[in-house]
Image (cartoon, rainbow, N blue to C red):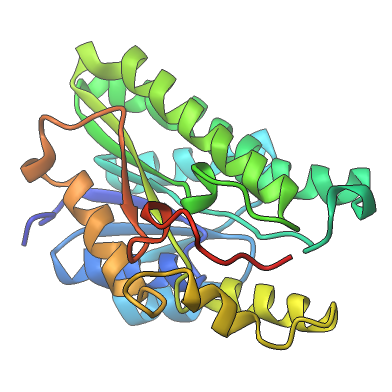
Length: 256
């Protein structure tokens, strides 16, 4: 029960990683506020949690979910700043301004706004742990995913700056960087690749992973919970890769 009675906010809470993390935090005694633009009422009821619908790209919505947490619980101990989208798979020359803005809005602005509104609470408390969701795309290029790769590189930049700014107050900020994981997002990428004539997308992805398989949401959640726990009390401003060795394999295959 590492998180007994701790207040945990999770954004993107209805997605594969968010929902798995919610169940795991709940199982370790946390009091949860689940945030998503999709309906999470059923998941919240399952876990005895609170759900708040919000668009992480809107400042007022982000301020709103932070206030909901404070009104309900009085503090915020852990923030899993997780909401993210993959966007459209296409070469940069075929992407539109709207394609770029959509991904950057959720993956970068959403992370920034979460930090902007949660950090002041934790700084006043002089305690707290934040994990932002990066990706292997925070470290390497992936053809066809220009906005996504740019956005996930930016997440690491925000993580490092926030960590340095908050460290003296006892607030830790880290990132988790999953590789291909068995969630809706990877299925979307496979389907988009197939629509472009790459019917072997799954095999190509797995060929570039030394472990020979996708990670599971539970494996990513384990890293998130470690970074948020007292066991990681000396860790801030860094990232933890959960990618089956993909970034260590320079010959890894990529969807084009």
